[in-house]
Amino acid sequence: MILGVFEAGTQQIGGTTSWAHPRSQNGDFRDIEYWIDMAKMLDDAGFDLLFFAGGSFGYASLKGELSDVLVRAGMMFSLDGAYLIPALAAATERLGFVVTTTTGSDHPLHTVRKYSTLDHVTKGRIGWNIVTGASQNTMSKMLGQSEMVPHDKRYEAAAEYVEVALKFWEGGNDDDAVVLDREGGVFADPDKIHLVEHEGEYYRSRGYHTQPPSPQRSPVLFQAGTSEAGRAFAARHAEGVFIQGTTYEQTAASVADIRRRAAELGRDPHDIKLIVGVTIVTAATSEEAHRLRAEFEQLQTDELAAHYYSGNTGLNLMEFDPDLPLKQQLPDDGLAGQMGVSNIERFYSRPDGSAPTVREILDDLKGRGTRGFAITGDPVEVADELERMMDATDLDGFMLEAVFNTASMRDVIDLVLPELRRRGRLDPAPEGGTLRERLLGRGPHLAPEHPASVPRAVGLTV
Ligand SMILES: Cc1cc2nc3c(=O)[nH]c(=O)nc-3n(C[C@H](O)[C@H](O)[C@H](O)COP(=O)(O)O)c2cc1C
Image (cartoon, rainbow, N blue to C red; front, top):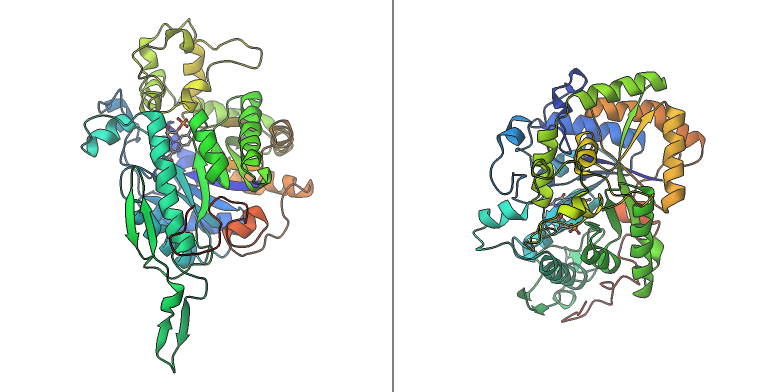
């Protein structure tokens, strides 16, 4: 079971307001010590990775307008996780770090340079979560674009963005380019540095990679977004996919579809690790866990849930008939789904085939925000449900979405992890090494079947 923690460089993740609860008063997100303490705790407990969402300029809004509700609730501000990572890597030994960077708002070379540096300073413990970017309505305005780039076109451009980046990482130089021959006065061998050329629809580039080869060369490639276009993208590029599940059936279908598409492309379908977000509220007894969960839910409001959801989808649920399903009421202006499909489709139907009403969706979102599954119970109940979920969906692991920040992580570490270890679901003594070795159980570089893993050569085509 792969275990990660979901963070966003914020005081409280995922569209809920539990930052104000007394149990959450265990640090300030603007303080590097808060993140260092968290990373050390996760490293000691054997977590595989700390994941930072974000990575775009966009902010959640009410149909593009600044929402006072979201500002008051603390959902406006975040730090860029990428800048936290060097300090966290220096304080930890094995923990991996995955940080989100959106495609489409800059040239891929910014990302090439950033992740090569992070791969060096983490000693190969870095991954890139590739997204086409949340809150496109606010992001496109901030970037001065005359209109939002359509959803599928964003994915098309993202594929080329990644292709350019991979050309530099995989093809820019050889593993033994740095020779460090002090006597001969040769630092690097020019024969082992290769020209990279790209002439595409969205990007052009010609030149050399200005960073020495790093332990993994390319960061571990994660992806989030399970629309049709997102799944096709994941099957080709991703080594890890972050899914926000609503029902086991929907999640199992997404997992199976991504693995099937990967196999069709000649990849081992298990070279893609599928990970879902899960909010665990646990305590020594089931009653205590449910009491904590009720305290968390009391802090949430319809209005906040609706405004946050609008930031992800462009839809304000307060404007819909609460007694009818969402799908029936989607506007036919062509805009629905342009901001992101997964967060709409996840509420189309339940396992019994019925569709939740807008009222039911709001109730669900109030405890959820953009979080995934929720489990509340004592350690045995939580471990049972995690096992059931893995078996029902063919998932590879979980990203913990804390309710009361590090206090919730501590509860899971103290109560649930020993139970999972007792059941043989967790590695008792995880080893170090690169993040790719840890997650995929192979070498530090892209698997030979990965479309970008081809012999390094001049003018490499991925
Ligand atoms: C599970 C999940 C996680 C996401 N994480 C981020 C993120 O960290 N940063 C971001 O800018 N966008 C994020 N997005 C939004 C996507 O960039 C955007 O919605 C895009 O359209 C892809 O989603 P789709 O395939 O569902 O349409 C996320 C979307 C999903 C579904």
